[in-house]
Length: 414
Image (cartoon, rainbow, N blue to C red; front, side, top):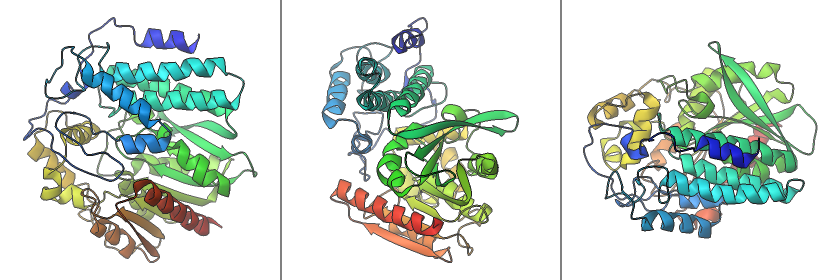
């Protein structure tokens, strides 16, 4: 079956799919508010989704194409579930968020099929995967069209790896009688077993969203990368996020001894946003299996317990949290009380001395991850390193942060 035929079958409009913003029937205290966070553009009340266009561009999506897709969505005169939000066009048709991003991904998929035996085709498949990933964003439970977009993203990602100069292994890990899928990325140069970084991503990303981190930063140093979907997303959709946030990653970490390509004596973890909650928890739970933990923009306490920070969270972020926690019908106040229990400080984890080396970087004036958050992490480690990044220029700051982080991770594994 060709990729094009697969797309047609998946998105056959034989049912009336719910519009994404209607999937979380919570009692909302407000509409979306304006907010600025590094790697995301300023959010505004005209969009339900937080537009992570800077992060999408960093992954390799052309900013011109991003603006073209957003313009098509904004210009649509089709029915919207909420007239105040541009990205709430009802039905899988022109103007609908998922439709427009999938359509753009299909253009790259077609180009990839025309370059099937060259590295250029691999890059085109990767482009398609990026667009399919954005189509499914923010991956709320019950969003059937988004789930189909995620399937296309995963398949395109695997097609890309066949043609690009690195190795990708699809690994199966058995947890509670069920299987979870992870992608092990291995450098083209060097021999297995490789030192490996376990990725703990944010709650609104897929495991296929970290290719550039591997290809440009880890692979040149001979370091492999293992990705997993976060709880309630993708292949991890069966498991809701619980207060034991590191549970899935911990089970995988314990099974790495059976993976011949991974040097289990040289494993580190990287946590981005809420993924830092997972990674830091792992540092305490599995010090014998981790050589170090690095975090960027960590969410481990401040946002989870700070009413002032939660007050400024856009609706989409609250919906993502409700979806991951399985609290679909919870009111904002109930959800915020539950979030307190996910604070690693409240749990009595952070604040105790940890033998695992920890690195944490933050951007100045970041409303979601202030300096105190990273200071709490590094001060809890016997070997802590703090990195402060200027708010601008964003890309140069991000590049320097990743370079320092990779040097730190390499130092811990060699």
